[in-house]
Image 1 (tube, rainbow, N blue to C red):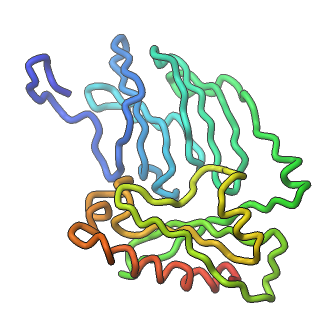
Image 2 (tube, rainbow, N blue to C red; image 1 turned 135 degrees about the horizontal axis):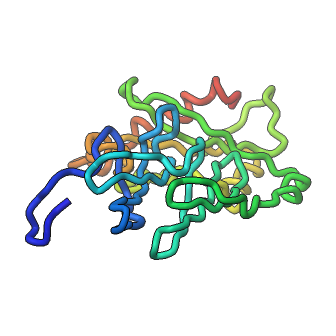
Length: 233
């Protein structure tokens, strides 16, 4: 918070998480609405949630609970929000809530019945350790719809090491190019790597500074091998 002369008054939000987008400011109630990642324990830190906090830094509140990633739409007033939430293994749902976070009604649920009838299988999420044995990495496995755990499959790792972005899917999508690729008889893996995303923390984000050629290779090479046992690949 700054005054009109640009003088710092106080910090509004603090903690071991990453604030992202200021969604709305209610001047009457002096509430700030914003999105953030990594605040909820036990969740994928890339999942986005909506929060509100007083401009004096008090009363931080999670408005979109649930172990999903949340995409939000809102009017300029910030009086209401439409929350569309999903995961790679969960079809999207949309709900209407007010500025207090009170659910006002379910709007719609994506109908995936025809997709499932056609044989579609959800991809699977996983978490492993980076090459340092300490840092958590998050990923997605796409298997052939007729996957047989008694067989061996070649692994293709979908690689885009960043920086500034990691190509690891978080929301539901039936149109990912990795879905048809897996149907050719491969197991396709997406996995994060140190230095790939600013949505974690500064150390993670800047891990590859000065070494944009090699910084992601150790984690990428360890990812598919590390997931073989747990995923029967």
